Structure formats: C-alpha cells, structure tokens
Length: 233
Image 1 (spheres, one colour):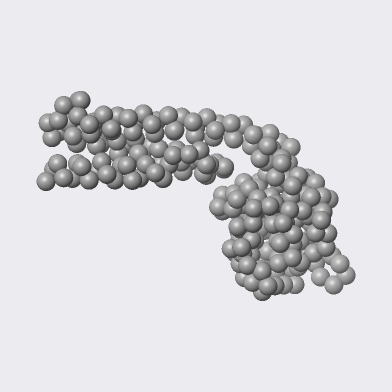
Image 2 (cartoon, rainbow, N blue to C red; image 1 turned 120 degrees about the horizontal axis):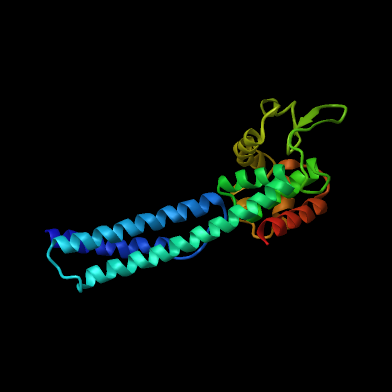
C-alpha cells in the first residue's frame, strides 16, 4: 500500500509540474505566487525522495533520481523568478520616484489581476482626466462643469457616484473594479471582453466608450501607449 501511495505521489508531481514551467510573471504579486509554487514543488520532491528512502529503496532508484531532478529544476526556476522580482522591485523604485501616483494606480490594478494592456488602457484614460495627458496624474482633484462636481482619477460625477468622494487611491481603484462590470454593461460594453483586448490603444478607446464616456479617444489611446512603453520596456 505504501508503495502505491509513493508512486501516486510521483504521478502527482509530474502533473503539477506543468503548472509552473515558464517565466510568465509580470507583477510583484505574480512573482511572489510563482516563487511560492516553486517552494511547494521543492517540498513535494523532497517528501517524495524521503518516502522512497523510508520504503528501503536505494539512492539510485528512479523515483529518488526523479525527485532530485525535480528539486533542482524548481530550485533553478525559483532563483530565476527571484532575480526577476529583484529587477522589478528596482524598477518600482524608479517609477515611484518619477510618477508616484500613476505607479501606485498601476501596481494596484495589476494586483487585481489585470494585464499590462488593460491596466495601461485605464491609465491612458486617467492621464487624460487628471494628468494633462502625462503620467503626472493627480487622483485627488475635484472638478466642476457648472452642473456637477467631479472627483478622482476617473473624475467621477459625485452626483451619480457620491460614495467615491474623497477616497484614497486604494479606495478609488477598488471602486473602479467594483463598478466596471455593471457600468460597461449599462452602456453596451462587456467587461470580460475589455480584459481580453490585446491592443492597448483599442482597450483605451473601449474603456472610454463604455466606462468614462468622455472626449478625446485618440489622446487616451496615445496616452495608453505611452504608459505601456514606460511600464513594460
């Protein structure tokens, strides 16, 4: 029975190994998750080898050799992810120094699971709303058009969005995430489709058409390309 359990463990290790085999992270949260996965797989490989030894198999046995190989594979992958995380964190220091508010919005949107394209599409709109078409955005400003007051990185109308009034960047990003699906649907768009768009200019226009409902589509698209180049080059 113990041998059966051990061999099932081997099969599970091979199957699970397929989930972490490429460097696909693109945010602090992503890197941390992948590093944790690597550690988990290393622990599993170690347990597999120990289990096999306890059953009396020699060090030359295929299961132990496989476990050692897998441990080395995931240790190398973990090191590569750690290097990329360190590089990413160094970039964050630079980004936060140059554009603290835009970078904070970028980080928080990425932490919500949005892609670089979707995140920068939103940033391109924020740049139009509160940054003078630059990454020097001010998400704490109020506006007034003679009819209604507006606030925040998306210049939400406080007549229709009173609960966003005075919120921090954290609160504004969460409010945006909470309202995007419903608002896009209300204006004929689809949030899931928005997240799938691969061209940042197209995504910026889509966000404007079905969420912001403002003017200057071409500027928003141009801003989004600027943001994407800055944060991914």
